[in-house]
Structure formats: C-alpha cells, structure tokens
Length: 368
Image 1 (cartoon, rainbow, N blue to C red):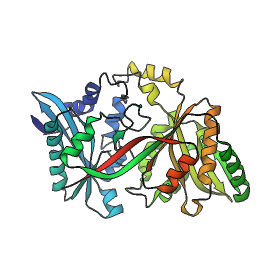
Image 2 (tube, one colour; image 1 turned 135 degrees about the vertical axis):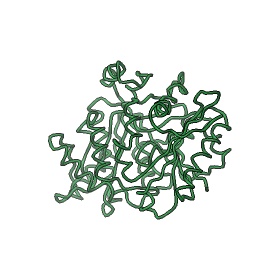
Image 3 (cartoon, one colour; image 1 turned 30 degrees about the horizontal axis):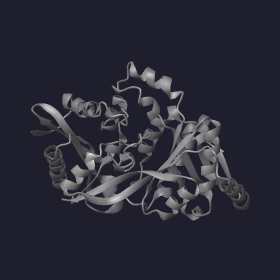
Image 4 (tube, rainbow, N blue to C red; image 1 turned 90 degrees about the horizontal axis):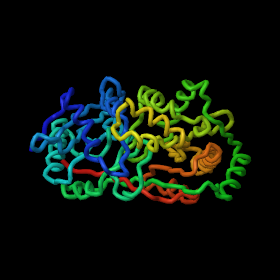
C-alpha cells in the first residue's frame, strides 16, 4: 500500500473521482457535481483558502485508489479559538483498517508539522461546509450540503482512537399541518413585540447579502466550533446558492426598522442530483434541471437571531413563515439543522415546533 500527497493534475482528479466508484450501488449516497467539488478544493476559486491551507492524500493498493483524506490548517479557527486544533476532511476509504489508519497517520503527521496538537473532523473543509460523520440515520438520504457515509466508518474512527467531540442533530417534519399553537404564538409575538417579517427581495440581492453579512457572524458567535465567515466567503456562498433560492423561503425579521434575525430554507437539490450518478456536467446537468422542478423536500439551513432578541419567540415566528410559505410552494417535508447536541434552547424549540430528531452527525477529536 502507498500513501501519496496530491499535487494537482491527475491525482486531484483521482481524489475527486474516488467516491463515485466507492458508493456505486449505494441507494442513499447522492453524487455532487464534480465541478462543484473541484471548486470547493481550489485555492484559486474558494475564498476559504485565503485563511487556510490543505494537503490531500491518496491511498493506493496494488496501484488502485483505496482511500483519500485531506489535512487542513484553518488559521481563522486558530484566531477565533486560540487553540492548536487542525482538521481532516474529505475522508473516504474501503472497509480496511490498514487503509484508514495509514490515511489518518498521513494527515496527523502533516498537521503535527504545522505545530497543531489536535486533529478534528471530519470537516470538508470547515464547520461552515459539510461536516460530521454520520453515526445514526443510515437509512435516510442526505439533504443539500450534508454528507452520507457507510456505517463501517464509525468503527474505522473508533479503532484509530478518535473520541467524540460533539454531536450534531438533524430534525425532520413530515407533516404539512402547521401546529395550531405555533399559529397562535406567531400572531401574539408579532403583535406584542412589534416584529414584522419580509421575504428576500431578489431585485436587491446584493444589498440583502450585505444584511446577511452584518447578521451572520453576530448571531452565531460563541457557538462551539464557530468560525466567522469572511465577506468573500459569504459572497461566494450567495453566488452558489442564488440559482436555487426561493425568495419566499428566505425571511428577515425586523423590529423598529432594524433587522434582528434571518432564516434561510432551500429546496433539497439532492433529490435532483440523485439522477446524475456520474456527477458530470454534461449531459447530467440536463437530468438535474429536469428533476429539480419536482423537489418537494426543504432544508432549513440557517436560522439566527441577535443575542438580545433570543428567547422572545422570533425563531418560532420565522419557522411559521417558512412552514406556511413552503406549503404554499408545494413542499411536503422539511428538515431543520444541524443543531449542537447541547444547545438545549434550540433543540427544545425544534421539538415544540413539531420536529423530531432523525439523523446524527459526530465530530471527532484525536490528540496528536
């Protein structure tokens, strides 16, 4: 067996291509567009790499790719948390501990050379992207911007000595009936607090993105593992998501003329991507566009409120907005999350809103 660093060119293409072979025949895995994965890994095109660096590795047995991993140094995380935590991501491997151990060893050795003391992940490449290893809910398909992996990955991690750092919980709602108590609460909160909601204005898209920039980092600060997004990262994300945005499903909460919170729900494009098993743009993108018209699943990707307005019911008000607007647009299933396992207010609110936990992702740590 050989572990080799990826230095671009053909090796990078092999790194990107490996999951499409590994998951062939897995009914749950959703192939992302290879072009999107290439952009995600590109220092020239992904602004994440303005404050981070990564080294990818391939494992080969008898000349054939048997696994992959990336070691990641995120300087933005180091500045925010003042620790010596490095990361690994994009992990995929055959069910062979000798392969996974060798890949983890390679990532760990690279991180040690950067002066880091802990290896955390999987994060591909950060907590603001796909993150966590699926440990519960293997019989359900992943939604947009979430990952899927075989159950044996859990054993490969435990055998290597990884320990749980944090669990991330995903919630689902399978009903189109808005709970009556939420309808009443939304009305009362809006009247008593003087809070109004409005949809995203696509004609002012750039200005709306500027509002998100002002709110995002403040609304999520102090969360475990949180790393602020730069303006360039938010612009990049907005550009990527703009083609699938439904304006009614992005709402801003305002009070006395000030925006105090926002929520973003997106159609689950994975439903359409599923029909392009090769992940190639042509002719696969035509199938994706055809099936994208028939998506009835929704993911509530973000919901944040400024600190001084938390526990006032603003979150319920925005959930009610997205729920009713989603139903009006023909969506019949919704997912909320992820939510940190120890974020009691948000987890309790999700249950009270009628959601049930159904998938769990785990972040692992390994002392170097």
